[in-house]
Image (cartoon, rainbow over all chains, first blue to last red; front, side):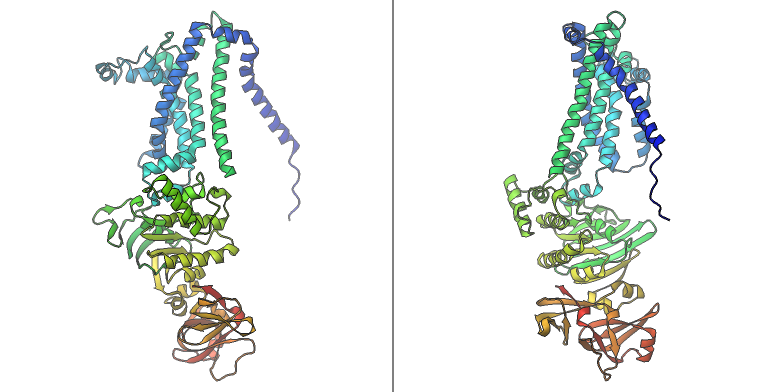
Length: 272
Length: 354
């Protein structure tokens, strides 16, 4: 019997709407509150404060370097994970994703144990006169460590989604694997790569625990925006609000830029 | 000459095959889905590696597992067109064609690509992305791209299967012409015997990873070595020269003698096909039926029972095959060496361009 479909139960539609509304309110309210509690004047005056501007400059500098390293090293690595099968591949993937679930403080301890003066590689780094603790370079290491898995995950699934037949067609047309990677795999995976990049960058800008444990919180050297916020939190709440608002604006514009760039590309593709 | 000897386990199937293809004599690999046809092309193109085997194209050895030779796909110079054409979606038609022309400078690449597109009737479509092209256009861009590099071998995987029936016929004729023109060994994979007959000078029937039989299409249909091949081939294919005849019919003078009438139009070198179940047999001395216009004298060479049908292999001017009921076979006392007349209607005759 093929009776016409009965209309969907109303209560479920109501439930979905309600849960979405609750989710939206819960997630958006704190973000909005930062702006509602800050006057534009406070935002501007906070930019005159040297601690805030130092932190902002350091955050942008360290996160940009970290992202550049992640892109250069992570993209070919993710491509290999996505296109080659080798023994232990799932284990490798799991190990690479582990920092995602690591508490940031534990990540900092881990970095100290590995790269700190008393760490496993500490001696070797010392011999090479490379110092990371209480150094800007240490901040870059911490940011790279916590945000790389976000990019790797995004990049790996973006490369998996690229049809194998395109890569194979490229090879039969005389292109080496490296050329295929540059001219076919990356352009086709670009929206996914960009999404992973935005997530990783956002995570790097917000990084707190690992940086604090590994690099410390020294103004102008290792004190990024989240650390400056924590540092001033007790004494100057309005300044902290202003700095938070700036961090939100920077992160949001980053996300938006990436979305717009890849979105425009998508539209261009559809338009032929 | 392209020669391949391949052995590979694919799931349940043990692929074990030996093939050689001469230039100007395209080979159609036909067989049911899952027979291993596509895998054979991928192995030759270098996109997969067999457990053991050897592939040589002319003087070049592309693979020799015993000697430890395995040439990367980009160095094999195979024009490979996959079933989905795999046109790069982020590149326009001309950039797709130019992709393989890396040894030329930028201007030369564009010029060659546009020239190649024009040759394939794609003038004015050079800036279109694959998504904006029709199925037939996509297929032609894919062929143009594969041939632009002047490959040493051409491998086409189901070139017609992604096309709608209307485009299919003209695309099939075009590919057949290209295969004749391009002087490289070519292998075409298809699961359709009609396509195989149209595109291949020779047809190799593959089943479960093994080569069952290899011969010109007409011969396969007429003298199948197994019931599987007999069932698979479906149609009889005869070659000849067409000219317009009376009553707006086309007369095809068959190679080896005899004439056949058909309702579709064509001139010059053609192939005609007819399904064996359209062919009736009678004793040469008994009167012809009213409606059948085509009559050929032929000698029975084989009688094979397939289910409740009997396939009768015949040699006349050219080999052909008829399918009759068991009762008819008994009544006509069909056996090897018996002389019969094969008849069918002009409307049951298909004309294929060669």
